[in-house]
Image (cartoon, rainbow, N blue to C red; front, top):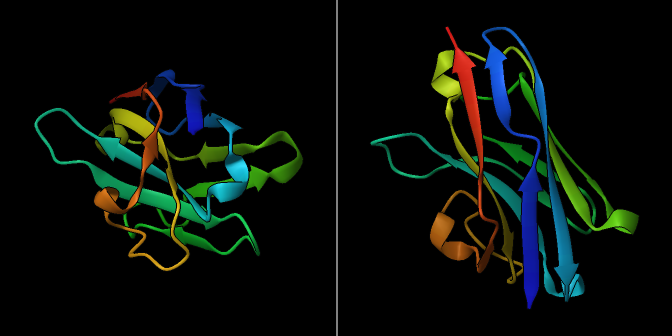
Length: 125
């Protein structure tokens, strides 16, 4: 009952920045954690970042820590991923996801019950 739509992906040069948005609709009050995952060609889907809707605690994968920032706007039911200092290893389809249990292993994709369609991020090297 939660719908997620990502936007903001595109082509960017190495060292550049992109800001991804995730618009949530439906029963957003049932979500506890919002996360960003990515999947590169030929690779498994991997955790990028997550944020708790209540309290706003943030979590990051080591590979993006210090470069990416996850944020939220409760009034707009939106989650964002600011990506700076992008490199070719960041090229992937990025997915927004929602988890509906308060205690989960946030890095595991199978703990998230709703997913967006994905948005492509391509970084030229």
